[in-house]
Length: 243
Image (cartoon, helix red, strand yellow):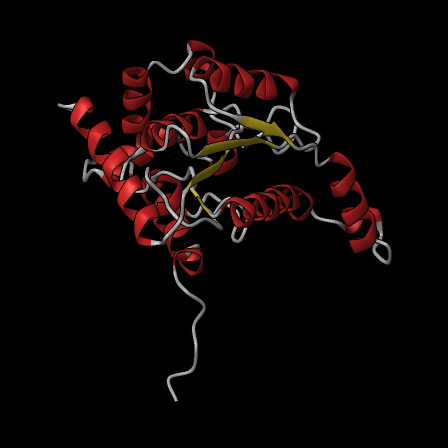
C-alpha cells in the first residue's frame, strides 16, 4: 500500500464518524493477542483516546495469546479488562451436551461457543458504556466466511473489512504493533496448535491474490470460490419471504 499514514487517518475518521452517527461515546474491542485485533484496538485508541475499552477474554486459551494481548494494551496505553470465560464455557457446554454422547459432539460446535460467549461479553460492556462493538474481521476472512456467525462476526463496525490480510499486516508494521504479535502464525486460538491457514486449507497469500484479481492455482481458486458460496449466508441478513 502506498500511503499507510493516509489509510490510518481515514480509518480513524471513519470510526469517529460511525460512532458519532450512532450517538455512542466510544468503542469496545476484543483483544485476542492476534494481529487483526491489535490493529483495531490501536485504531480505536487513536479515534477515542478517552473512550476505548479492550476486553481480554480467555476461554481455555493459550497463555501466549493473553500475554500478547496485555503487551499490546500496555504498550499503547489502552484500558483493558480481563474477563475469564473458562467456567462459563464449561457450564454452558455441560448443559448443552447433557443428553448427547460426548463422542458425538462436533469439535466445531464446541469451538464456536467461545466466540459467541465473547460476543455476549462485548455487548454487555458496550451497553453499559454506550460504546459500539468494533470487530476485527478483514476482507480475506469475510470473503470465505472464516468467522463465527453471531460470534466474532457479531459486531457493529468492521474497520478492516476492505483490507486483505497482507494489507492489515502492512498497517500493523506502520502502527508499530509488537513483533511478537506480527510474527506468529494467524490463529483463532480455538484449540492447541490451530492456525487459520491449516483450518481453511488455503494460504492468505493465495486468498489475497485471488481477491486482488491475480491468477492463482485453479484448484485453490475452486476451493476459495466454494468457501465463498457456502458461506454467503454469513454475509447477508436472514432471508424473509417475499410475500
